[in-house]
Image (cartoon, rainbow, N blue to C red; front, side, top):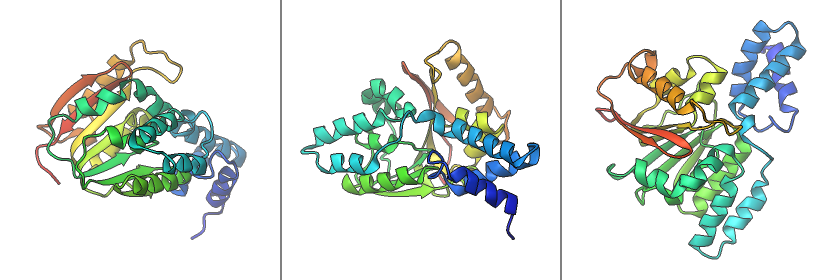
Length: 276
């Protein structure tokens, strides 16, 4: 059955280039709530755009020319040049830009000691798959990327093929359609605070849906504006609240957890007692 106000809202939102590539199921989920609580259709459209900005738009400083980026990677003369291009591209998204100063140690440290990683789900991945050359993954790894930006995922699918990774991209809202692929490792990097800001309880729901033996969960050590006072303590408290069973997603017991603190990021490696 057609929902005319909701369909009109999705059309109105996606007329803006900033939101055109966003997964329609996310726009619809947010739009339903905004239509229910706003006094007018115009306010609902504005509220939906504001939520979408919180979820993803705030992390992009500028539009990315993906065809140009892919050409640069294809024309790289050697592996070191390609890695430098990946670094350059990761600067275009706030989350991966903040990780660049610690990139050489981040994955090498947090994933050290794990058995061979043959499968990965990268949740709300952004440009993080460009960091695959820094990850200690098995040669036959299957890498699944989940995000709301369709144009970026088309680029990432081409990139995965270019570097010889067996990968798949998934254009979807991870709350209404959680990742369904079981994996050795789930990367949930600086994702939970963003989801929780947009919808209370979202972090718990996501964690409860992930099917992975190991989860690398991280939080930013500073705000988008560069302020860091109290953020590590606040996010660590949020993490332990989930783990200690104060939310429905963290009812699993006997998690093995290792904490890592870097200059720009707080991370936890969680190992569940049984594999999926």
